[in-house]
Image (cartoon, rainbow, N blue to C red; front, side, top):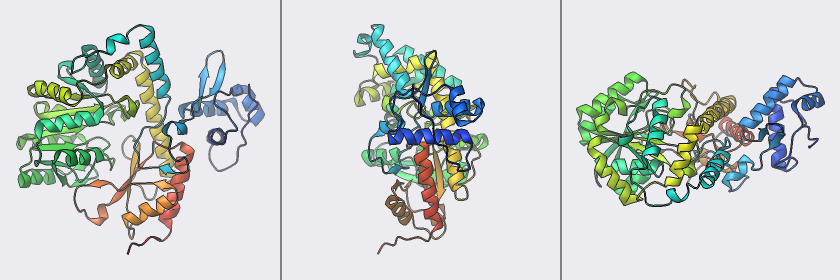
Length: 454
């Protein structure tokens, strides 16, 4: 047992938050070592002259942040792997450009699932050539999970893929050829820009507003270009974070149908909603490809996603998977299936939602007057509109000089300056590092622009 007791420096935050910040700082400095056992809550409360309720809340928050874990009958221990260490890189730079989910102990549940697979002698069965579409039991598990999100799926129409990007690549290959125009949001997912560069698609950005794609602008773009494919993210769009209301989704679906086009829908963030919006795809299933990844709700390195496709494309999608990877890794699909069945994925989602709320509270506290108000459940990124008088390159450079990495958004062609902004990714750094970086970013925004390019 350690006699570690934090030094709580008054900073205006609640005492339980100050406790967690002190623990986080002491882990980073090495004063508190991974594997160290903390004092029981009552003893810690007595040492700090705080209520047991306050310490209980502090321990719960520290566990949610992945700093500690409780073991029944043994006590509470500092996690053996500090969250900041899992990504490597330069610890002096805070990366707000990489949109990864916050750490919630996912490595532990994945490790346990792998250990159980090995212990039960199932490993050999998962290391052979298996169906391109994915094993039936894996597709059934994913279909059940999607049904819980309100996205009902038939396992026969589901395909297990090597992550969401693989699914998007296959889906677009079904409905677009090199040189074809593909419509998307004006600011779009960087992976879509990479796909267009690789495959020769001509991207056309469509005007949007606070509710996503503008129906009139989409209708006009279809008429002007003759495009037959639309890629979009209706829920917590990357990079702007917009969420289409139901009536807007109805309008967009009707426009796609009217122009005899196909929709490719990326739904990476639906899990952050207790009651997610109805998907665009379910409105026009005969002409929609729906892709959902488990990178954000579980772990990016798992590289498992699912694609739902119209029945008429089933054979071509099977061949698409065969041609680009033969099959998604069955071992990782089995891990996902087990986490769905044993409830660990549901618990990871609960923790990820709580992390999203916490990190958005930090962002609002630090940059509230510059950020649009949140009107939907929070995600892992926030859109920062470019303030008047600022140049995008200058803001990115000033942030880099302060040790903060931010990146310009992926936009398709020249946009009005008033619409420019940057995506702030909140999931990568620790909460303490995130808060320090956003406070520093606020300081940069408050000062006159210092960078000029000649």
